[in-house]
Image 1 (cartoon, one colour):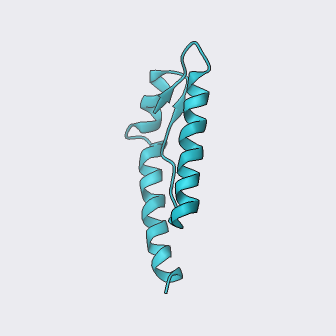
Image 2 (cartoon, helix red, strand yellow):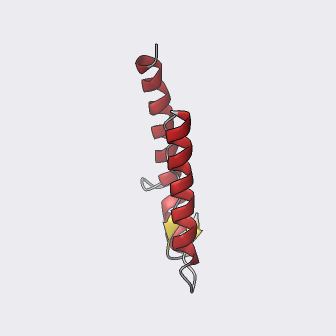
Amino acid sequence: CIIKGETMHDQYLATAVFNTLSQISAESGVPITVGVLTVNNREQALVRSGSTDMNRGKEAAHTALEMARMMKHIKP
């Protein structure tokens, strides 16, 4: 989770994370899901990671599992 501060550092960090994960995925041929939250404050982070329907971490985990299942059918 990256919480916005008073500077643009959160944007630089998020860009670096997303670019690096994309590069790793491209080089390895393994799909990578991104479960990094970018929020404005602690309250938003809690809403997006709590036990509600908006739990983005849970969504990312489900997506990763689904991608793993799909990869079994795609690769020989």
